[in-house]
Length: 193
Image 1 (cartoon, rainbow, N blue to C red):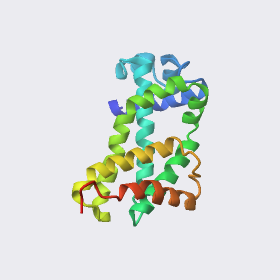
Image 2: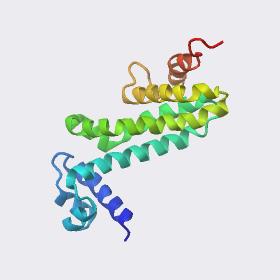
Image 3: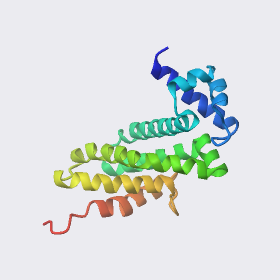
């Protein structure tokens, strides 16, 4: 078995072990048992132990999450539809993720630091997703980088806390996108004609 496969097996074992106890309580022994490998193998692939494994688990979940959202959003024919599809998918995935919901309700003090560490990378990934896609939707080239960052920040903030917006209702999400995302994002920079 190659190194990447063993690392993936360990991360999957960590997810199962966390569901049986919690991120804070699970041990390297729990992870090894859940992954069906020895503790020595776990340490050979994750010298940093439990903390490194939890960080890899959070990163893996983020990547899986963003990949799923991107696949759904890419089916859109307009920027508005892309944002609507993306927001609705992201919110549904966050609500359905048992491990995330469990950990946020039971021990947010353990999960939040890992989420914070990954947040800059996630913001850059989401902004990069928008940056590649804004041009075909008729966005001026000199605005794309700034608007992508803006849309990424808005997108992630609403996925995290939707406020009074119902992100499972397409008409509500469409109004949100038109009023909050595109209303601001489509304004020209100060001094532009």
